[in-house]
Image 1 (cartoon, rainbow, N blue to C red):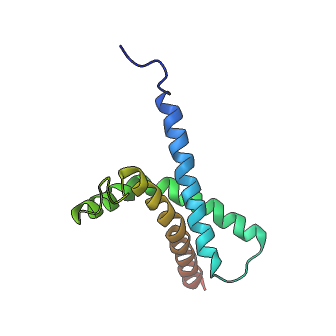
Image 2 (image 1 turned 30 degrees about the horizontal axis):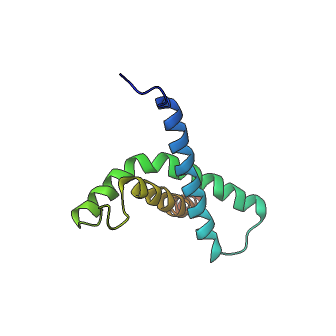
Length: 114
């Protein structure tokens, strides 16, 4: 008999996307700590970009990072690195590094056009 209190799959997908997006926002915040001073509008746009980068990059990058950490025996219940925490770590890194990659790409396009 199936359990009656299991949330539907669409709800789980939305909640996990929100958590990954929050990790991306945290990555963008940490990236801004040592960066140049920016306006609040620019900071908020970076937070949104960090969340979007995390939401779209994490499903692709998380299995790669999980496999790499598993190869070095870094994933177990005793180390604290579980597949769920690897997903959060990937979202955090995607938020921080995704913005940097986007800024480099935009600068490259501007240099090509000038």
